[in-house]
Image 1 (cartoon, rainbow over the protein chains, first blue to last red):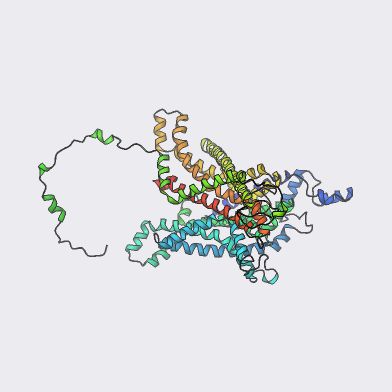
Image 2 (image 1 turned 90 degrees about the vertical axis):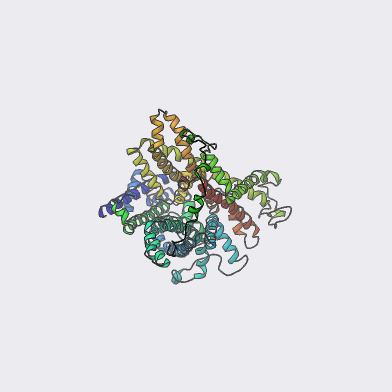
Length: 319
Length: 321
């Protein structure tokens, strides 16, 4: 178990290193120089100083080594478009916003999704089952972009003016206030989770219900409720766990669109703006940071499986 | 199981059987050869899949819907006679009417024509991407399965690295490198998606290579070309089609999303994402400009998703066994 953990950890570091390297060299190929427009009117001396500040006067390989050293000590670079903002200062400012949105979406979406999944599996073949299935197909099929726009139109202006159109709580309301701002974005993002988790848990529960040990439990005379909660649910959670890294991806990917629709000043919004403004230092730093978050989530889930399911552990960590 | 059975009841079937005498039956003849005679015509995998699909009303409805959407997307931009780009300030921001079915946009252009043109672009982009994805995935997966060993390991590691980043992030980076345009968009959207196909193809081919009927074909002296033609391709085809069908909605969504946030196709190029983005700015005053493209986008994605579900039921080898 310990060996497996360490092995996976080393593989994680290697992956991260490769991603950082690949991103660095990919960004070298970006046409245009982010400093050209800024330094147009400056004297040659000042321009040289600007280039020197961002290290852009050095050859590519030297810059690569400087950047990598920076990553090692946690220096992810400074914004070119907004001087003075570093990747860390942006993280400090924007990450809580995106994190709150993501946590709210996932909590609501996964809870409702799992509840619907349990209902669908228990009432298989009757109307609640069909309602849940139809609902999940519909929810999966409607892009969250359209969902967001429609919710915004219906509840924030066009038809009923219930919620503010755009914006996000800041300052002391950062975590636990300004709920009226967060409701629509949260709803927009949570539908995807509801649909995928309801489907996932239902199929997984039906798989487990057909197992022999459930028949054993039934023949022991356990009540339906006890069988579902003690035996079926516990064993059907592994596929659900497997889906967690995917959900984090969904959360990050979704934030690019949702934050744009509702003008939420979070990471997704900032990242797309930086990409559009060709702010290479920020893009590189953030890509590596997001990749690191992703990989750590995958790593933790991998370790979690082995804890949840002894069958994986006994097979020597091979899946 | 717990209900009590009365075992003393006399057996009615036993009584019936006693009525027959030995002479009531004649031997009509049956020999070992007859058991091999094929009574019904053999049904191929595809005929069977098509039969299953046809029995599925939802899948058929979505197929018909898709045909209608395709015809609309092909015909409408030519048939309405409105110019896609010409600005007519007099007609701007009209509500839907018999002249302009979806109304006009902020520059007086007919929205009906533009929405279907956007649908055409979205569908074409999705189809092109799935084609690239399937091609690259098959070749890459085939190479992995064929060489195996260290080549397989390295190529698999590459896939793992690519998939450990959110694909949208890579797409955004590629758009940044390649610039905005149709070609850049296609490459950027395909750069990650082939990984899933490659993995599936590799698994499928490796499983087939170890299967008994391929071994049988080999020991009967079939050439590699024949094995590939007769066994590998038909068996992989189902998985591949399923893979393609389930990926199309994702492409349509990513394309419109990218165009919406200004990273995909940019105006004056028409796409559903651009129309949505323009519609959002005016939605308080002219909701039809938002609702029409949104509705068309929903219908297309929904139809592809439902058809994909139907295809999964019809094609999935695991469900068929």
